[in-house]
Image (tube, rainbow, N blue to C red):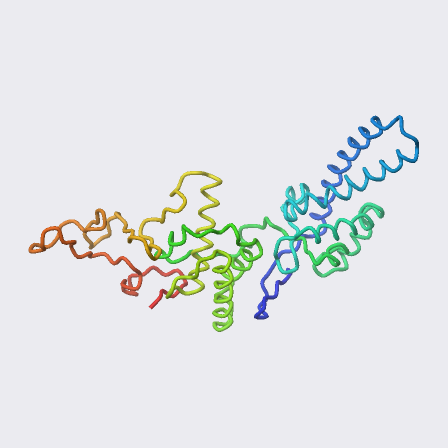
Length: 324
């Protein structure tokens, strides 16, 4: 088990890939790369048969570098660390801090991989992975990367607590496109372990992650909402959007769920689902107004709209403290 150490010296766990799964992923990648190389080299040889030997040799070297070296670098850069072999084995290349890799990381890994994988038939890479505590080969050491498992057994995954019901759907208007994968990973890792951390450290981490997330989305966190609950609500909103894109259906984007607290500047949204002991609500006004109410005046709402008006004993327990 690897550890991602945050600025507060709190270790968050990553799951490094083991040597057999990495070897299988590399083998699959090599098979695809070799097939592409043979096809390209054959096409180049046929089309340049009229050239002299020096030109043909130069084109052969260029084809080798382009397909067997440049190809994997381009694939890892564009896929953020997920080649075909790694996708098949459920692996991914990430930075040491858990963030997605960039071109420079893929370039270093690919350049050193020519020596430790292609020229030595993977012997150097296997030895380096066995010696390293986190199973890293030389390319990972020099590039500052780590191959981790994306698919793990359900029983080993951390449970991300759901947000409080009064925050579900409140952040449906946020723009989450600028939030990097590394920040999402840090937020999820924190939410899965916040109950195990020291309260002061947990509070400091939540505030730092919430401010960073708010800076990326361009909208500050609402006043009175605990940072941990804010993080859980935004993660829930991202998961809801991914589910809508993957499966379709569900509430449309930008429409809060029933009973959600509205964003400032919008009209309150009230649920029409009847609650035991309360009058049914239609269009925000309860039916069955008490006698003597002025005509046209809105009747008093029996059901609380905002969480701070709801008794603490009636709020569902989610692990978060509602705002005062």
